[in-house]
Each structure stands twice: as structure tokens, then as C-alpha cells.
Image (cartoon, rainbow, N blue to C red; front, side, top):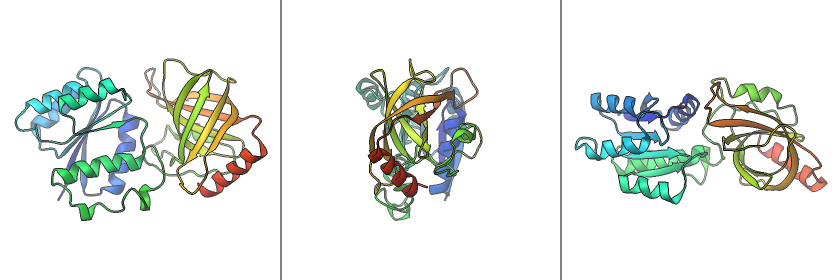
Length: 278
């Protein structure tokens, strides 16, 4: 039986990566997509949907307004609705809960987190049997951290320059863990696309301010492989920064950092990281 999932996000990059994850781990699903809340209303008025995945911040009709519209419609009120957004403050979460959201997923997120939410919602609504959900979050293909999903380009020990362009293709690199970048007392929570002994390529949410090229930073790397150790406070500088999408309002940035003055202990941990997270 096909499971119909409606995916609404104005960023095509996010939609493509979510679709890749869903199709990999939930092959029985049919994905219908749209770029805004108005398109979602049109789709929901024409065909049955088993699960809605929606961004919050969208032009025209926001995810919150779409949620309110869905819950006010007698025919749609029971459809599970997962809000996916970078608005992770308590105020926004409470607003979504009060509007009747089924679950809430903050950006950036892992493929594991996405599938946990999707499977839980489908099981609760009776659209998916618990025995058919595959490996749990404690092991199997969901055990490694990744922001969404994709094909690994694997360049341990080599240059990462080519990976900046790789995010603009359909074959997004598999992500290898999380990172915390600190610049001038500002924190950036990122996902790791690739790492070598000399540099690391990250993707992060665009903020109101961000470091310029050559700005000094420190970065803490937490690998997706739970057997690997986190590498704390590695000194680095910004080698390059670019938008993931070719649009002035791109939501995510590529951040390429070159390590600058890492200790012997940190370089040893980096070597282990590279070997254990190919």
C-alpha cells in the first residue's frame, strides 16, 4: 500500500534531500511536493494525503497558517502534520502545539531524526506497522549522523575544494556528523560534509551575521560514528563561504575551514575521525 506524503518547502535543496531520505528508508511512499502553503492547499483539496511535512517560513501562506487551515477542515483534521523549521524557540514550538501540530523537527536535523518523526507519525495514524519500520535509531542505517541523506564523495586526507561545488548537484555528499563553530562569541551549529587532516567542509544555517574569509574561528567536531571521539576547540580560519543555492535568499551556507595550529592530540583525533568516518 502506497503511503502518500506531502512535502512543502520553498527551498528545492531541502525538498530534494528529504525526498532522497524518504525514498531510501520508506520505499513504499509516494511523495507529492510543493513550494508554498497555497500549493499545499491545492494538493490537499484534490487528493488524499497520509502525512504532511511542512516548513514554517514560506512566502504567501506560512507553515503555521497551513497547519491552522488543515486542522480547521473536517476532512483533513486528523492528518499527521510535522513542522520542519529553523524556528526552534519555545514560543514557536508552543504556537505550533496550540495550532495542533503532530510533531516538530528543527533545522538542521539528521536523517535519523527525520525518519524517527516520520515513522512515529505513520505508526500512530495506522498507516505503517511497527514491525515494518526497519532498523531502529540505535543501529543500522540510521546510526550515523547526517543532516538528511546523500551519496558520499569520501575524500579523507585530500583537498575538499571540489566539494563546495558538489552541493549544487543532485548527488549531495553524505554527511559525517555535527560541528559547533565559534566566531567572535557567535555560535554556528553545522553539519559536517567532509573532513581531511587540513580542513573541514560544513553546511550551516544562514544567520544575521557570519564570519568573513580569513576570520579566525574555533570548531568542535562530533562524528556521526559514535565510536569516534569528539574533537574540541580546534583553531581554524574561514577559507571560503558560499551559498548552497544560487539565489539571494539561500537558507544554507557552505563553510570551508582550514585548521590553523591544531595540537598533536587534535591532529591524532582528526586522523581517527577520517579513518572511522570514510
